[in-house]
Length: 73
Image (cartoon, rainbow, N blue to C red; front, side, top):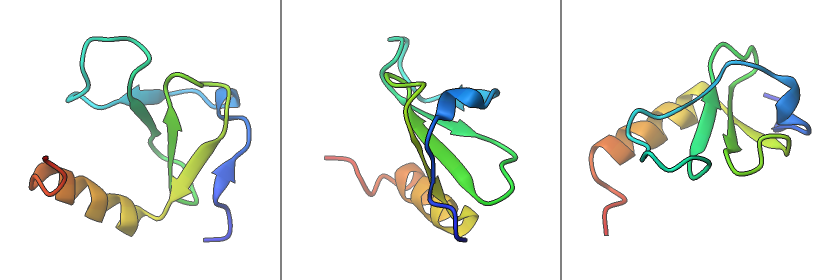
C-alpha cells in the first residue's frame, strides 16, 4: 500500500460512523467503505481535513481488539 492519506477527505462521499458511536454529533471516527487501496478513517470534527488510510488487515485487527475489550480502561 503506497497511499497513506487522503489530503482532503471531504471530497469523498459515503463516510459512516460506527453504530457504537454516541449520539453526540462530530465526536467520533468515520470510515469510508469500498476505497480501493485500504480503509480510510477521518475525524468527524474535521470532515474536510485529511483521512488516514490503513490496510484492510490492520483495520480488521484493530476492530477485533476493540470488540474484545483490549482498550477498555
